Each structure stands twice: as C-alpha cells, then as structure tokens.
Length: 245
Image (cartoon, rainbow, N blue to C red):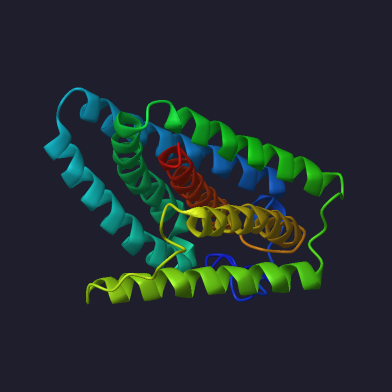
C-alpha cells in the first residue's frame, strides 16, 4: 500500500495477529478522527478568541509552542506507533493552538477568509470521500505513484525555499501572488486533496487486516495531518486570490 503521508506508509502496519475487540476497525478509526478534529477545533477556538480579545502577544507565543510541539509529536507518533493513543491527541491540540492564531491573523487582514477555507476544506473532504466510496475515484497504483511523486516534489520545493530563505534568497514566481504563484498554490491544493484519497484507501485496507487497536489512532492521525495541510494550502491560495483584487 503506497501513500505520500509519512504517518501512513508500508511499514506502519505490521504483521501482528490480533483477535476480538483488540483489532483495528474502520468505525474505530472514524471515531478517532472525530476525536482529533474536536481537539484541533477546541484549542483553535481558544487562540482565535484570545487574539480578538486583544492578547496578540500571548497568541504569538502559543502559536510558536503549538507549531514546535506539533512537529515533535508528529515525529514521535510516526516512529513510536504504540504511543499514538497519547501523542495523536496531543498533536491535534498543539496544531489547534497554531491554526487558531494563524487563522485569526489572516481573518483580521482578509475578513471572511477563514469561513471560506473551512467550508472548502470540509467540502473537499466530503466530496472526495463520496467519490471514493462510490468508486468514482480509485486509488490505483499509477494514481498512488503520481500523487506520491507530486507530494515529494512539493515537499522539496518548500524545503528549498526554507533553506534559501536563511541566505536571503527567494524562489521567484511560485511563492508570489502573481499568476504563476496562484497556479502553483492551486496545484498544491489539488495534490493535498488527492492525498486524502490515498489516506482513505490505506485506512480501509489496513482495517481489513489484523492490526492492533492502537493503529486506529495512527490512521486517524495520518488523515488529520493531511486535512490540516489542505486547510493551510487553501488559506494560502485564498490570500493570493484576494491580493489580486
């Protein structure tokens, strides 16, 4: 099973034989997804509310804390899968701190942009899930290979931009607000959305095997990682489109 999500890869699900209620199930994974979503939304609401109450300096600190903690917890969850029942919710809470502040800052500059991004994110999730379940989109090997390759290319583009930024060098075009930048952001949004299909397929296939119960948290974690990425990229695209007006 191939997926571009580092939290869900061929080594994620082992060969353990599990019986009875200790087995990973699709319903259990879906329930864990809702729990993680609630965690994200709870802390996001907190930092959002703090920002508009005038505590912007406090929110900046919480964003930094959430971003760093989220990164560390994501690494731990990916490599220490048995810890996922603890680290996955903590990751979601940490990311919520960052997303709430990030969203509030953009909302102040571009009123209405957050509700648009949230609607587009969950609308995309619903449409792709419906298309996947109805077999309109099938995660064939070529499909998986293409999405994985495109995701890798995007990752290296962002990594190169991050490293070059330390030397005061910016990659022209793709990270700007011009036509090329908008097309690039639209492309990234599409690839992020297609990663949801890979996550659906991976979780469904893994749920049919004999995998331990805690893997439900790993499956939910991987899906939330993709969903957060999609939301951020939609926000970035909407900002660029607003700048064009």
